[in-house]
Length: 95
Image (cartoon, rainbow, N blue to C red):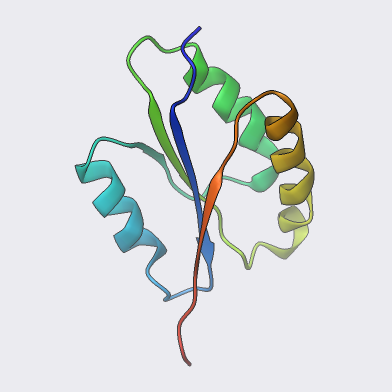
């Protein structure tokens, strides 16, 4: 199993540039998962860790997915306990 060397969680409000940030990270070698429900985060990371060639992962999570967003903190804690630390990129935009 390959350890993820870099893990970025992209979130923020609609229109803040989450998609643009994801495209930039993809261009510099990240494997990008877009619009993942937060409660699926640890399963997605576990699946990626089984890959032989993915060392950099970026996941886009919609901050407005109210029903699912509450589980994000729990998922990040589970990942941290498993030795996977996320850098969170929270994007904001003026109305």
